[in-house]
Length: 261
Image 1 (cartoon, rainbow, N blue to C red):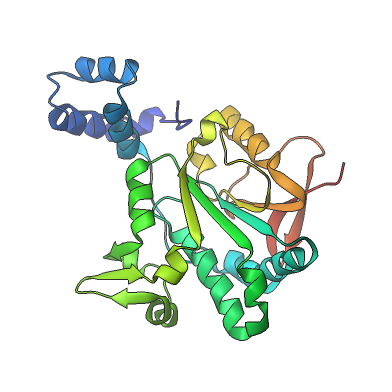
Image 2 (cartoon, one colour):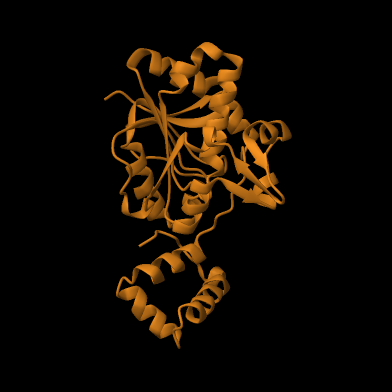
């Protein structure tokens, strides 16, 4: 249902998840938990998925990627807004929100440098999705503590866009309201409506089987506007099949661009 591929080497992770859920859902045996899952019990499914998803993420993950966004991709999106009146970004598998919020902060940083572009940046729609309901809840709240609050986040951005609480940081509403979070399941190919000028699906399909990753990649590529960009993690080997996209470097980072057919 999720597309997550758990090889035998991850058996311990599965055992721990099952044991914890059997206790918390007051089931007597793993078999009773399995029955709940097979019956499509909503609470059991959501808890099970949350326990198996890898929510490893951090702010501005991969300097070269965000440098490419800052110097090439974001200016290109603004030019798209000037021509058509809108541009759309989709962050797939956004976990607890660090990726889409990092993009939102870059957009605001662009406005700080070029105040006259604010009217165009405000026309860029940013949607983010994830299969983990708990992760989405935290993302919408925009509150982080511990490593979530510090990993990859420059001090200047923290001071500019967050309220500092006792042992947490709270994202300013200005940034938080730039992102709309929606539940999605990449394995089912049910994605937000419409097409996007930039789709980010980074460091998630490595947890899928080869066939599952290829199917999800095809679904994502189909959601691109003409000349839209699809960005994966730097170490991922995903590639959409066929001639619908072409690989190119933008600012030194590899992206797939939708071809005009």
